[in-house]
Image (cartoon, rainbow, N blue to C red):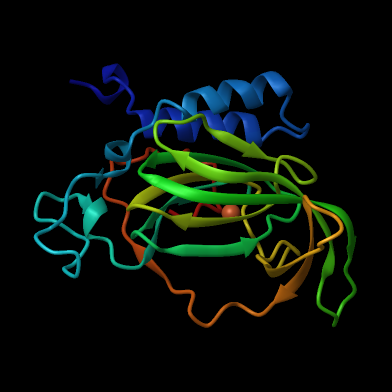
Length: 244
Ligand SMILES: [Fe+2]
């Protein structure tokens, strides 16, 4: 069968949708955001080459099974599966073992779609109410809580924006779980969009708000990389800066 007549894979549809929506000069419209959120909501772990039930024999064994799939239940460290990245957007999946914790971190000037593919996790999310940031000094400020609670799959895709929707968030896996992450634009140290981690300090007289203070990358945070084992993505040849 000619490739032109073959049905597109879901990951191909996601790549093409992101490319159209995030390559425009204008910001995406609300309608486009909703449309993409609905598309992302249809994804399952297997669409990214992850067997959410696979244990690979023992939790300490390699996450790669002999079926050519990543075993969701065999993950022993937080693992990032890099699917695709270009200047405009990135697509990846974070797989967590039970108890894995991604501390509070921000997404500067970014919009991020997050879809819990399987499992349960505890989520906290804040937006800045007031923030002080000067070169050479740790960023700190007042964060207003947007969300705190347990997410269990299947659940709706969440969207955070540069200044709303919970731009600063943390995840603690209650069971093995995986989160699909579509970010626009991607993190970039060179372009002033680093990932910054924060400590939180409650304010007893102000429930629902926290003092958030920048901290160094936590020493105990290890994020391993794993290859993307899902369907091939046909990338547009005009995308010179793709980082598959
Ligand atoms: Fe995040």
